[in-house]
Amino acid sequence: MRISLTDHCNLRCVYCMPLDDLHFARKEELLTAPEIETVVRAAVSVGFRKFRLTGGEPTLRPDLLEIVGRLGEVEGVGDLALTTNALLMPKLARPLKDAGLNRINIHLDSLNPKTVERQMRWGTFDQIWRGIMAAEEAGLVPIKLNAVVTAGYNETDVVDLARLTLDRDWHVRFIELMPLGGGECATLSVQRYVSNIETRRRIEAEIGPLTALSSSYISDEARNFQLPNARGVIGFISPVSEPYCGTCNRMRLTADGKFHLCLLNDDELDVRKALRDYSSDGITRVARILERAVAMKPTGHHLLDGRSTRERSMFQIGG
Ligand code: SAM
Ligand code: SF4
Image 1 (cartoon, helix red, strand yellow):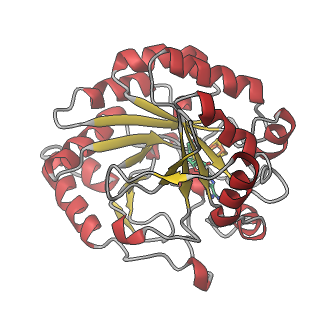
Image 2 (cartoon, rainbow, N blue to C red):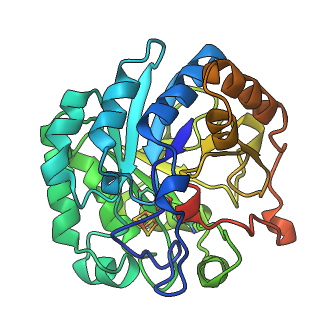
């Protein structure tokens, strides 16, 4: 289950958040820390084991440590991870580890500071790199880096990112652009799309052949590979060129308390209302909604027919 904690962010990546005309959820619409804990207890009761906190930028949530602490203590939570742009990790990595966080995925589109400035806007490569170092030092490992490959921005920088795996035991994953929300970021995501077939070809041409690794679990969204004699892993997340909808077992909880059934679809079920309309037995009520949400998950996306979610953008769901 991917749990979005906020729709705010301290970056403005070109394919995710426009610079103007942004609308955010009101504070009272966001699920509180105890409400999120109730949803997680319900999820565990119906079989969920892996949880990931995301956003927007989850580290902007003032009660992040409280949320991690609460979820880390729920019996049955097998894995608690965070997806972040790492800007605030120098301050937060150690407290997050101490609060019970297991792992971290860090978003970094390039090792070239100029590309980072153009593509992720507002933040710098040095800030993100310092965040990665702090996370590794705190033991939030294995470090997984996510890069969204975008034509005209970082499509050739993938080679240097892939090289990181030669002497570091990191996972470097390349994500294909997806159009969400119907606005300017969706348009850019269509126009600047780069297939992972091309990204893989580019890496192999420069560094050498990739050897496929077997998946450790069937619902892994990444196809994993290794360069000759590398310590780390290269992953390709290819929702457009190689959809993995058939094995997708993810459920997404938006920051304003909806189960969003598929990243690339608008269907949602309201959880917040069930949490707030009654004063007791929230866990059972949410568990029943969650079972319905799982049963109603669409069997696949319709990107190739030009259809995607129109109601929400990526920062409003959580990736
Ligand atoms: N702010 C955090 C971060 O960037 O990692 C967490 C939220 S962000 C929405 C989660 C992931 O979505 C990031 O890895 C980002 O690269 C990815 N993402 C955002 N917009 C995307 C798009 N249009 N297509 C594909 N991936 C996208
Ligand atoms: Fe913020 Fe993550 Fe979206 Fe970039 S991808 S704007 S860091 S939420």
